[in-house]
Image (tube, rainbow, N blue to C red; front, top):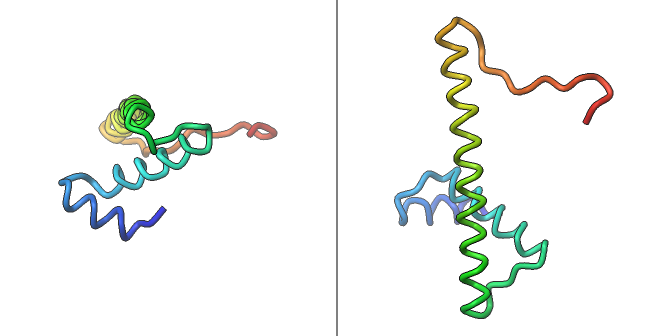
Length: 88
């Protein structure tokens, strides 16, 4: 993933750099699992998958952000989930 390209494209499109980088990573992952974007019909399918997964990630990030805001309002700190010993 080229962060420099992501920065340039994000500026052109008026998007956050983080979202553009996420799109690039997701696009590559979809290729790894068999998606193709060389033919118009397949490209449409891949773009729909990108949008579906990006929406999922947006919802997940929003949920985590809201939990952090709530925790901070109560005087706590925002931390990721703790892993139990012996668990991945």
